Length: 243
Image (cartoon, rainbow, N blue to C red; front, side):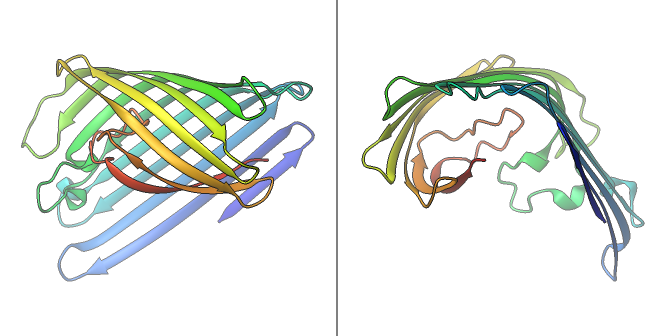
């Protein structure tokens, strides 16, 4: 079931999903998903965005198969109407991800489901149009919270902190084509480890609202600090829309 409401400066969308599974191997499983998004335009230049997703899945075979997921986000976006050379987004998010053993990677390669986490993330993004064709942007993010190895029985929670820095440049080659280059740096405090590298991409504008691109990420981490899989290296395809 989906619902939406819009009135003047307020906007809300929500959804509820129910899934029931029954098979000979894993028995019966009941899963619920709740999704909520709320937006409020404080004035012509500033917008408040919030979202709350919650999912729970219970299996009859064993409590080890149960899973719970909670994600909360609150962001404040600056998108000026009269002069849009500078755009910014301030964002806080909370993620509590407790996967069941059915989500674990069978070949034991690192995956996000190998870890449980209770993470808080603070981030700020910004981009500034230096010229009509060249824009310079960046992102700073900081994560703190707890993680636990889900592949080890009775593993303990331990603190986890990391910060991410990104410098980005966008250049319009011709009217329909853009190139993008990013330098990324990730530092994980408890692991005593840091990683850095580049990402490049080429985009084509299909119209005034949509562009499609492809590129290559030379680092093995993403710009999402809650992604603990470190499997982001390689080619990618991306679609970006704006309103």
